[in-house]
Length: 395
Image 1 (tube, rainbow, N blue to C red):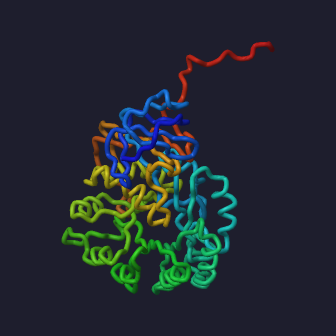
Image 2: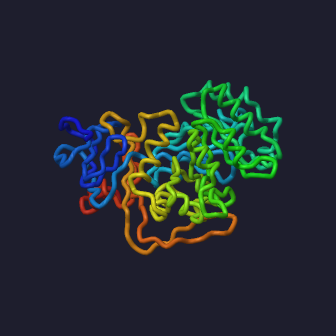
Image 3: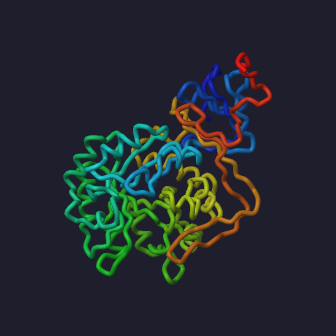
């Protein structure tokens, strides 16, 4: 149990069910926040010990969610971090290759610095970043040395390299991304469709322990073979330490891939959204919705929370994130598992398909650095009946 001596706190989340895999908590607990830190996690913390009490009964209280694959830069579809994260319980995001070494400074100034959300970045191996499909095919702009230097200059923010959408017959993008990762001591995230000259089994052989293959349940990157089983090269890559990320997006999550994979015990290492404007509208690609989809195909709630909090924190190289430990940054998600009749939408080259479910995860509140930044039903607010009278001295 995570706890500390009683103290006057600024915020008390009372009556919720805490799931904190780091501390082995999966039971009803109250959570107290003082300043920007977790002050206590314990049963029945007195309401009198807090300046603000939020009744979160009927909700799960977890560490702030960490989205390991989202897009805040690099295309017209990219979104400002706060609008795509905070209303959905996400307190930390990783921009997946929107910027390259040529324009990272601009990305940092215009997106990372103003955001309330904590933002990390992968640099694209293409110096111009995701500046359009033609730019991402430009092998001459894939500079491993310049990319590694840019990472080392801002290692506090930049944690690795992304390569994506390359259509060429060769391995220039992957090879140079891995070279940059080796020079900078970081990892690579790869979004790569197979072509005849470079197949998925060959790609996974190239990846090192700790590197990430994203869109692991995409229909156009099929993990399931014609025999209905997870393909052997995915299994062997996992045994070598290659990480598999969801990256749901607009076209990159199919129930036809996820359900049999999970039934066979092949769970994703990390859950992420690949959020951008189109995917938010088409498949509602938010962290709580993707967590719901994975619950619907057989994952446990504990596994889903773990892969949305501490596991991505470790991948980022920031183990201090992703928990509700006393003294940790007070980043918290409050999630309701609502029951009813729901339709969950996937995406893929076959078109959008729906799975019926009897539950949906609804983000109720987000706390970032100790402050309530999203409160769907005003659980932390005073009732309107106590509104003070206006100043009527002027007509």
